[in-house]
Image 1 (tube, helix red, strand yellow):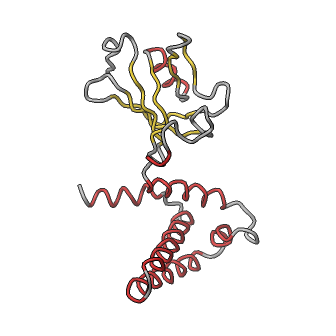
Image 2 (tube, one colour):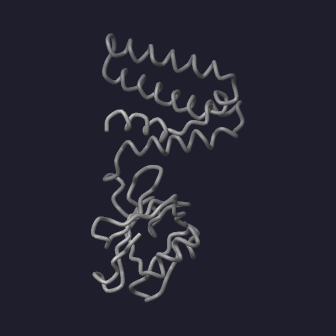
Image 3 (cartoon, one colour):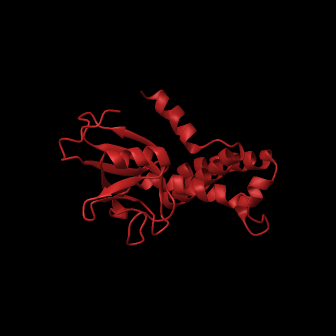
Length: 197
């Protein structure tokens, strides 16, 4: 990866994006030492223009950014860092430094996928998701089938709000089924993407 640090006086902007949800988390600046430290440690590190020193995100708050990948743009002067956040990214305590309403609404599916995964180890007597995941696979499959039929019926015989609710139930149960089969939603999206390229 060739990075042109000269254009920006030794610094390049680094856009950090949540690898799971696609939300843009923050913008920072990196010099060559920050890039090197990020690559070596796996933790996103910036150059503080105010303090004139390197700082690793979360070194005081604990809200770190684990780097998944780093790429440079076509002009070699801007970085895109895909990361997995551990806690809120913004110093104000929010998930992102940008207006949450500007985030793509479909990114919630990534949040839902993480919630389903976290509930897998919960007590099945107090968590519907845990109960589904602990039961036999054919029960979850059956539930997905039932929800699919309810979506079809709602589309022709019920209100738009009913259809939205039934579609939400179908998506949730499908995602539980995918978790039971240890298939990430990203893998399904990859299949969809490959069909439309």
